[in-house]
Length: 502
Image (cartoon, rainbow, N blue to C red):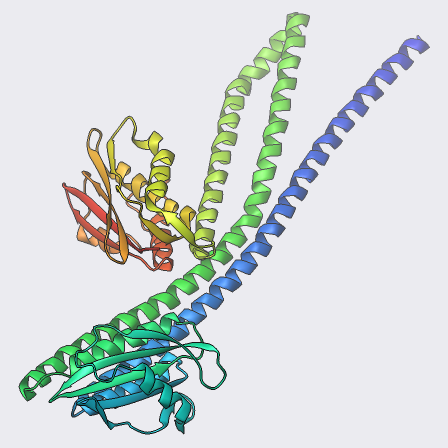
């Protein structure tokens, strides 16, 4: 009897030890997953912090650049209304372009009959020090400019030169305008080095229009009418830049907010994700144990099995197990959806961080079509009219592809079964245009105006985050492009994406 009791005690002890070992294994598994999750979040947080800093710096640089552009337009508008004749236009334009283009020096010349009648001295205008005597620069200027020319340039011209003060490579930019009465006004700039910044190009282009609007009209009535037209155009540019400045500030703040929200959600959802996975495994073990217990009772038979069946029916164990399994699946799907939304928020916060390279337009469209083929292959006819010649743009292939996938997905969603979707590519002198046209339900003007608003969606709850078009707009603007949209309810929608050529 004693030996039998000892054997039973040993069996219980071994059973307890096995249970403890299994419990410890589960705890170890849970701790391991939690540690891996924490390491992943730490890596993500470091990357987010770096990207947020880069995005903030870029936003500040863009805001400062737009502020300078607004100041330049204000100066140009005031000078346009105050200038009395062509010569005043030229010299007022010189002051503005030197100040805002970051040029090294600038000079204006008035030429008649091939001879300089104003500006024939050694002075040049410096953005920081005013008028300076620089005979080497003025000599080089007169040698480089074709002062006998009597036709206005259509664009700014660029000469590669060596700076006479240090022999460094630089650029001489010049523009000539017909002032009438045989007089021609020359505007010339020396750059500090061989680079031409985007802000300088904008200032030069605006100055060109400023001069063309303000000069060249014989009649005072014509001149006044043209001044009004130019002023209206400059005011419109001024308003557009103000709107862009406000929009840029809002998007920058929204991007920082999105990054913060994404990080704050990432941490708790990671714990929920790992805990749900572990709990799901534990529940599977419980179900397995319950099945084994039922098998033991069934083999034992009699009252024990009857009582087990009664308890099973009383507590609805089978139905509860199925319900809990469905809950785990639904919870897992919900967690993954939250993670997808967080990823979208991060993309929205840092759209312009990928390296730019030459992108073949036909290739990214074909890739986007392959990625979305499961959505339309049994529903819609998608026709891609590939360009016969290679069309390349500068940008991120992944980001442009992301935009196209989003647009094609939206087109498929809005287009009834059996209807078609058409994709075309056009090329102009400086731009490529991708056109996606569907035979869908179309959109009202109110929806078109809201479609780029973050979190706005026409899809049912659960089918969309409302961030796709916001992210797409940010990506295209980062690439120097723009959207154009034409939609009619009951007819369909046409969306064009314009990007600069490589």
